[in-house]
Image (cartoon, rainbow, N blue to C red; front, side, top):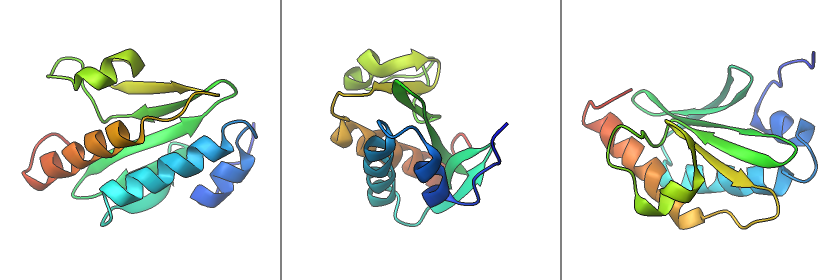
Length: 120
């Protein structure tokens, strides 16, 4: 088993080479949508918190996952549906451009929900 990375930079550096650029873009989009969020490693993956958990992400050989930003049992942004992997996971395939505007939108919605005391 690989050691848990100490920070997000180490996580990205240890990820498969093909997903590293995607992880950097994802990180930047999250930080732009949630500039007050704190960044840490939790459960072995980059995690962002602001007034509660916002999201986390992970990189794999063939895709990148963004977790906790949408919930299938609530209204889902129609643009997110093609990426919805499970109840609350968006999955982006390697080699395809990330939908940056969508990512920023769903992260900003989580920020707003956390600010209003919504789901954590």
